[in-house]
Picture (cartoon, rainbow, N blue to C red):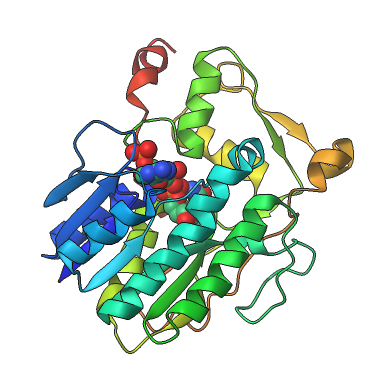
Length: 308
Ligand SMILES: NC(=O)c1ccc[n+]([C@@H]2O[C@H](COP(=O)([O-])OP(=O)(O)OC[C@H]3O[C@@H](n4cnc5c(N)ncnc54)[C@H](OP(=O)(O)O)[C@@H]3O)[C@@H](O)[C@H]2O)c1
């Protein structure tokens, strides 16, 4: 199968390129600023995805069976910092890709986010009412609506949870950010009353690939890890997994009541119901222990880690 993958240098895109290669697919992947190699790609294409005409030409030149969109401005703070760029990547890009997929009768697989929900009524079923609290969540919701309108037959949209994995930059995943903080002598703070249901980028990549292959499935789905955890618990389990002590790897506990202005833009609980997708696929929701076993120490922090 020929897959056109946007965001191949990202946390999800790089995991998907490797998983697709293992399954024998031909993957053409776009990258933005990342200059290194991306394992699993048959072709790596540097391309500014905000250049709509270059994108259309490139997609039509390759005429793929499937388009997977893993490009985005996926950090809510970056969306707030540059709303115009975020709108182009998070809304206009998937809309254009969905139209192209529809035109080519290609499948379109798009990733949305748990952040479309306000966090007050978890666990969220696929049909639950979205009510995003931040710009990123509003853009992801807008992308869902636009994709479904542009490619009603061929589009699959997966709302994903907090993701961890070994990123190409070594700085994208939560565990990589934690290591960077600890190595710099900082004490990262984590909410004890904010709940997420994390899974690995690799596990999500397997799901997305199955959806590339399963032409009988279309529409909107949820995917996440097997169990909800507080953000503080996630950080504490990461510290334990890497056998770091509380003194070398400190964590501060905070609550939403301590930071009301910040909490107003952060959903409290984003546990997701995984039906109907879990059960329809061979890939199963991952335990947090399985996720932890896949993580490596980011290369830039190895010397610090070995010195502990
Ligand atoms: N990470 C999470 O916890 C999470 C959770 C839920 C949902 N999601 C969703 O999952 C998807 C993938 O997220 P991710 O975390 O893998 O994102 P990421 O690691 O931040 O990667 C973003 C990708 O987009 C590319 N990109 C950005 N602007 C570009 C531009 N103008 N031209 C070309 N490429 C550009 C980047 O390329 P360069 O780096 O080469 O510039 C990179 O490959 C997104 O839809 C995100 O909303 C993520």
